[in-house]
Length: 506
Ligand code: BES
Ligand code: MN
Ligand code: ZN
Image (cartoon, rainbow, N blue to C red; front, side, top):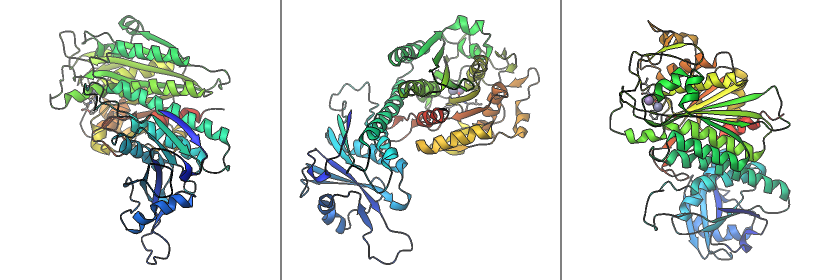
């Protein structure tokens, strides 16, 4: 999708469709009807005039994602005018704007429209935040998961060109342009991650994932090394290998390094991702119902690869290393069995109670390796537990943090990125559940508080390094399409992580 900025007067712009935000100005206790309840967010009187009749008819309420399409709007050069509701004016922010841009794209592309102009809602959001938000939302909305559909009419239903109309000369054109390009980098990285996650397991094996990471790294100038079973065994990654040993498909340890000049030498961020390219559960096999979804069990790893792409292209001045542990989790004659004991890279012994609790095993060694490489702060992302879906549903991802300062930084980044996440606890009391009769710990315990148990397990391997764990099991895959995003891979956590890395620039 081409993106460009225009400072034209919206009514004078020739476009297939002009998109304008409408907001609901009413407040609950407002009885007086002296001011209009719905406002059109454009300083161009001709645009407001074109929308006047349909608004006074009462058809337009400004409700979030409500769309109203007018053809041949009077007084405008645009062929169509699309009004998109942004909800209550009081609570409108860049996060809403991002979703509206996605909703506009999804509404228009389904009508075979290929280009449009989005009028920037000047009074509602500052342009420095709003312009990248529109670009991000538009790219995310343009993503089409129907890769293997052979019907041409179902495919390629995408928007080709987006113009953002930022009126007047109040804004520095150069700043706007670079804000737009930054939004584009982040959004394309998010879609890059979604591309990886969308692929089925026969087309996204650990080996293929490593190749994709290598190819991307070469394109953006990152250092990428990928290793196989030999190196995993040589590093004594017994927990990672315990999972990988059951599969005929070789595992991959993917290491992406970004060490720019000008980065503070005391800070070295480590991003660790779970990339189980298919999780059958292993010998503790999962029920058949819904098992096909376990192709997205590599979303954490795919997220970290996408984050590395974004930070390299944004040229952020922070040293970052990503470690992606890619493997299948299969039942076979070579597979690990319940009761087996594995020795992790850190030297800790683990009794395998349930072979389906494999994500924490691969991450245990990934976290340990990140520490060995000198990372001073760790973040992992993983589709780790069904229990986080029980706790938070499909709405919020789970955040766990061992360090308050690091949490504050992440929470700020997360807010800026407009992604829904919620913190869960890591009290010492939960540690009781890790106890094993035969080894240092078990890999699975009681079903109560399962997401917390998994996080407590990981904490044993992050040790005293400040660490954040993101459980994205319920949020990495959209179970339903939303107005702003298709059903399928969401790319959750990427934007928050890019913002988080940005926050460490000195
Ligand atoms: N990959 C699953 C978690 C998952 C569940 C991801 C639903 C996406 C959607 C993970 O490896 C797993 O199987 N976890 C088990 C752990 C249990 C055996 C302790 C779970 O949550 O049931
Ligand atoms: Mn599992
Ligand atoms: Zn899994």
